[in-house]
Length: 312
Length: 254
Image (cartoon, rainbow over all chains, first blue to last red; front, side):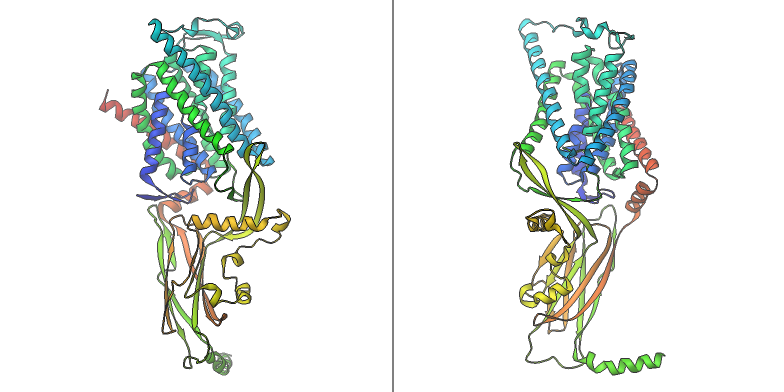
């Protein structure tokens, strides 16, 4: 069934879109990532203009995150205090990122910068996560005990002022590190056009030492607001949001998110992290290959007035 | 006044009669893009009206039909390897290129149209794409124009359909032009040319209006006229769908 999209001005297969939304939804529910780093390249691949792909992808992430977070709330998997503190940092970082993005657009090399940040951040996060979870998995298998609880380890993070109690996370730490992480993620998400879950989830586990069971829900909670902001910003500034495209993706996405969050419960934390690491590395690898291999068509056609939006 | 005009016309008649005139029609002059729009086929038909019998001893009559979508300025970029990675390094701006262009003919275009007539009427694609002064932007600017043709041909936006027009007894002609699903809104200009020995004998312009309709129109207008409301609506939709799926799944499997 072909569907003509009013803003993207292309005709695409509706079932293909449903499937893509579904896959991203499953990942979102399973790992607590928004899926923006996956949906944007996928949409671009099927011929949606980059600017439309970024704006509409953000809207999909809102929906799948809402669906995922509701499932997590019932499981008491959301630390609202932590999420709010991170969100404050996130909005500051996001505003800064938007400003940098516009400066890069003016310089004409925004596409390259976006691609390089994808390779760099996804690559680094993927490798770190893969190493760590593989080690944890091996240790758990050999000794037969669970790995060291990170929350018990005291680092410099625990010696800062403005200490707050994050009951659900099992933490009593300064509000500054979570806010800084939120700001960094907000900045990156504005530049890379993603929710930032793939950076936030490992940061929460490894830097803050939060309990794994609240990490996903809290990450989703924060992502909802960051991507909602992005969606409206794109709709107002560049009119590149395609509601028709969003709706079909969302239907697939919300159903996928429910399935994903149920699958996630059955898997062990280490296994979950290894899967996410592999996925993140795959996307980073694909973008790296695009940069390194000789393209089959070195030329590309663009509109002079169109927005050169962040897309890998 | 009208009488004077009529006399003029009558005086002019003998010279007109010597020529050949196009009488043409389109199966539809309006295309509505709705949500399930999947391309459209337009029949362009017509006849050649002449007051005198078919001329003898001259070349055969030929027909060329072009359909041209709205034109826009474009940027063509080329990737080059810099420090090991491929980046967009050179860009060339093209003043105007059609979003869609089809040339249909009764014979091979080079045989039925002279270069000077092509230049005057801008019939083939290379004459339609306006790229003045691009030589200043890049030394190999023609490569960029060639790449544009190649990319849009692959997208089914540019087509050269030689020998697809049926011409009966040098009088009746018809051609089916397929408009693809990824159509851009705007006025599509249809031009019909009659040529003999490479020269254009007569030509006629017609218009096909391509518009979004129904829901497509509504959403497009809303996105451009009330963008904030449109963005918020998208959020409400997203939140509602997210909550809805959560509630439904809880009912199915608590």
